Image (cartoon, rainbow, N blue to C red):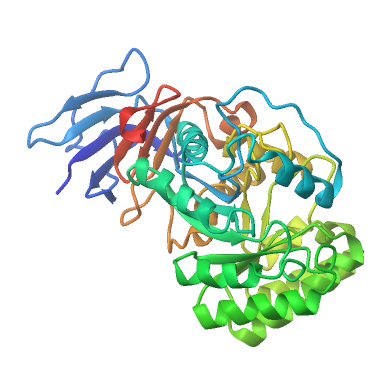
Length: 415
């Protein structure tokens, strides 16, 4: 039975419809001016609530652009100092330097903590993100405490944002005896994925690290999401190893390479060959489209339908002072990095941050259509490309049919 009707919205910029929601699912999307659509006047600000005969709530969408909730396919919500006093950037550069600096300073800042994760997740909701895959540090210093904190943070928000956890060995796997056992424990305790980190550059044993991770993944029936920063041909070689093991283990659709800068750094023919192999094995790619990185072979990734997810990476943490949790801004960065300009291309960039990322949070479908979870974002924009290039505030955010943010602010329903 319909318990909420969002009237007069334009899904993906199309003609206005009403979105009928029941039990947190989109039931139907009749034309906004159809015979059964209730009359609704414009609201002065945001989207106004009222009631309809039969008890269903009405929200007047005022003709606003409607998008599915954003999906953050690569986050680190356990690491942030969001909401705390400013922390100046310090330490040495490079992956190893950032790891060392984080280990030296995190306790002083109370990282990880439940409150820190709640603050970041609330910011995600404010910006319209309703689902995320987050990497959570698992190491000899914090054990599984970070995972427990993130789970509690998600619970405090009462399911407003769906959180999938990757148990992430930020300090290495093989070089830190005991980490493999912690990863195994995390998988047994419900982590959906295990992480890995630069098998060559950090552990200096790519075969050993990957064999160990794939063994746990097969035995525990979980996915893998491996950070790969190693550049050029060294990185491409590790792509080969991951692709081969994915095919051999039958883990197609459950393995992701995160960052994977090498794909854009090697010669075109080599990169295109890797893309084709990824497609055949079922290996996806998550990127945060950072400035100064090499563009990915985007047209080839799209041609071969390789899953590509966008993410924020860390947000105001000991790795970087940057980031605000806005996935629309990440999609804009992806579009600019890859030279996307026409309307179809710009819309595709937004789809990468929404409907096309469904698989990164284990959803068969994530879109504005009957049968989909009722995650909805309203924006004051002419069309999708306009929304992308202007990044307007989120006027209304629904998660599972509940209002979690309104007029750019998290509501009581969002924790």
